[in-house]
Image (cartoon, rainbow, N blue to C red):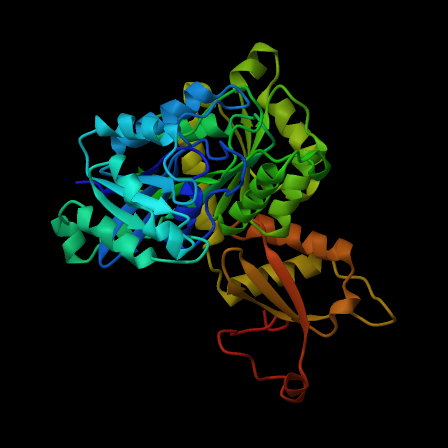
Length: 465
């Protein structure tokens, strides 16, 4: 039996996304006063009172979308209703029942599933006292809440837990199946309309997110869990990135913030490009963000079938990317056609390989031998009439692989030589396709006093090898 699913439904602007974030205890869905902000189904796995369930936020029922995506949004709502085990019907306690609430109630009345009526925005005793009129909407238990006033979250959670189907044996045992941490988190980023959501749907093998020719269809960062060879992976679909001066409204601004946050929490970033479009300033800004966060990334050229038809080759696109992103020459390049699900599995396998590289640790002996060879091949030039010296190197962390070089004076090493050393390390170490974070540290006064005393884990210096 799969994890129970709880769908939050209702008309626009009753506080569904606010309620979703409140229950999740984190900002996941975009919250804005504009009707129709939520378009896709947002999901979050909750663990409460030893039970696991998936919370689903849906778009507002009965809205006419400004980008003519009404049919797509309604399709997402219908799929949310179909897959849910429990329906949480949210209404506005300040506005009272309105005709659109009646239409939603009529739609839900024909669905034979447990329901819970939530009267939100009960910010005063007056609205809490006047809830009797809402009972006409649904024949089910009623809970009053106020997200703004942080009122009755536990009461709502208890009501949801009471409606959950009985726990499975696996869940009762220890919950490891449901609570297992994902093997890898993939952030899928790129400018607008490059096919990110199409790729997500290809992975999910269902219409999990709205796909449209309208640029900027995805407004939230959407997490998709799926299994590959028995390992759980989360793919994060992010809003399309655009230049800051072009942001049209608060919704797009928050979408941009979520895209940046998705990069920070990802293990591997898939940077999507449209094979029929040239690399833009936005693409470069996006790659710069990935670089700043030291995230392993894969350049993904989508719509490759159109490129082949136009006479383009893998070599020409690869050379083009190398010219535009010389500082990310370590990033592998993949060519996919997401709409036909072509090469998507190969891309996931490549992402797993890159992820494993980011987790790799190298012993100090091997690291210092490579360092010594690099210095013999190209010694750092003298600066300030002083000879730059490196005593030893040690890897202190993974994700990203982080190497500390103990030297006499970090200021003696110029940037060009450090770039040379990074290139050597990238080539010789077993993480050739991930960024390396390199620190240079001078010896402390105590280390100068005891030059033969090496720190724990360091067995030999560059001079010893």
